Image (cartoon, rainbow, N blue to C red; front, side, top):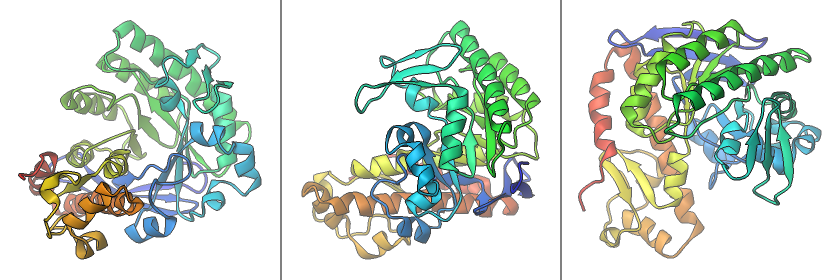
Length: 376
């Protein structure tokens, strides 16, 4: 592991490949499997840092692309780094910005050198190279940073996926070299790509392992492929990864997915679903998803989730939350986001409790119900 980092496995599930772990970082410990809320621009939308601490968030994700464009990595470095800038004392992870750039099909051009893209803010042109991504993330000074990779849409041809995978490998080498040219108290993770092709995933994983990163991420999934295919590709990658290092699956998922991936041996996950859905009036509960804008909740005095003990469910009714959305009140997003994050973090707590107890199967039965819309 990089200096200041250590990953230890504390327990294993007797019926799957799930493991309970602890990741030590310069800004504190992270219990794994862990779910990371997404704080794209240095903020989790509708949440204060006090709320996140109260919820028990141990690791936050921020985005290199957005912080590079606004307010700029040099400004954040001058203000003491991202931890100090956003007032967050606990561990941080920054992604490389690759996913955001590669989602802008009409605004970017990929070459061996890097990615030439146009800002979604003002149209200005920028070249993001592997070396530049490292430079930006050094300035942000998150505990865990990512190598620049090539993320593809689904579906993509085998040839296109192979080219993207090879470019990702070349960029991984350059990222590692740039990082080692001026080491910092950070851990640089490599990323495995290869689309939905098992042969490419295996090849990519084996070559990335040769670079000996302190942790490994699986990218390019949860981009529209069927869930079963995502599970299969995850298993292919995990089979190649060393047991003693943390595994990060990027951009997943729904509550039931968290357990599916944890069962396969994933240690770290992130997703915008709990926060984005909350802002659109969708709440996750143990009995299914509620769309709070529906008129059926206008006179419903029950809590959002009768099986949830978060402070929103202890205090407010569905009718009140529905009223807030109907009135376009900011509080609607705040309360629903708080609940959704509590729910996701509670799912992860239960997964961590179930691993040493060998009861993941029982928890899975509960989580299946969370995927359905509840009856009116």
